[in-house]
Structures are given as C-alpha cells and as structure tokens.
Image (tube, rainbow, N blue to C red; front, side, top):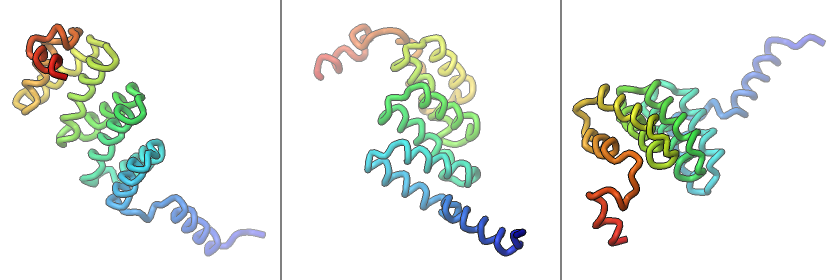
Amino acid sequence: MRPTKRSIYLSLLLLFIACGVGQTAEELWRSSEGQVRARKYRKAIRTLEKLVATYPEHALAPKALFQTGDIFMNNMDDLQSSVTAYQETTILYPDTDEGVKALFMVGFVYANHLKDYEAARQAYTGFMDQYPNHELIPSVKFELENLGKSADEIEALKGVTNAI
C-alpha cells in the first residue's frame, strides 16, 4: 500500500515533535541549565548543540556554544573537547562577547591544563592581534609572561598561593 501525502505529513510532524524541534531557543537554554544542575552533562551538551544547530542566529547561540566548552572543561574534564567548543565559538561568533572570551579560554586551557605552551602562545597572540583594546589584554599579557611557570615561580602570585 502506497503512503498518502497526509500520512507522510503526519509522520514528519510526529518526527519533528519527537525530536523537540518545537522548542524555542529559550526553552532549550533553560532545559540545559536544569540538566547541568542535575549533573546530566552529556544531555546538557546535546541540548546546547541542538540550540546552536536550530537557532544559529539567536543571541543564545554563542552563549550555548561557550557553555558547552565550560561544561567540558569544568564538569567533564574533557579538555580537548572544551578547546574545540571554544574554537568553534570564536570561529562562528567572533564579534560576540562569548567569541572573544572563547579565544582567551583556548589559550587558558592550553596553558594551564594541557601544558601545550606553544598552542597557548598562538591563541594568546591571536587574541592580541584581533582584540588589541579588549579588557582581557592585561590577562593575556600576564599569561604570556608566565607561560610554563608554576604558581610558586610567579612573583605576583606568591602572596596568594601562600595564603591558601
């Protein structure tokens, strides 16, 4: 028996509803926040990825992609995936606050977590080239001056690390 146009339409409609296509960007964002609170990190990442894929031009899209990087770094200890998410944020949304901060975070993760100082140097240098007047420039310069040093070797941190 050959399917009718009506049955095909209803099947597609059910498929879209089942996939959650009807959710707004805001609903997806709130859902991901709840998933993070519930420690369902993989599910939160899938929800954030759906937000970006479904609403790439929405103001929440760069926030969602940046948040994905944060979840990978802070909650899942998947540092390479966090770098990838931050790099995507920078590439897709370079003129947003999240896109700028994501480039800083690429350098930060490489320097302070992965100990890949050359990759960190490239990210930080790229940051200074792209955003020479950004408020994070002093932090970028500090990071560059102290690449590869332990907290005990950084003069500005000596009082801080001893107090902890």
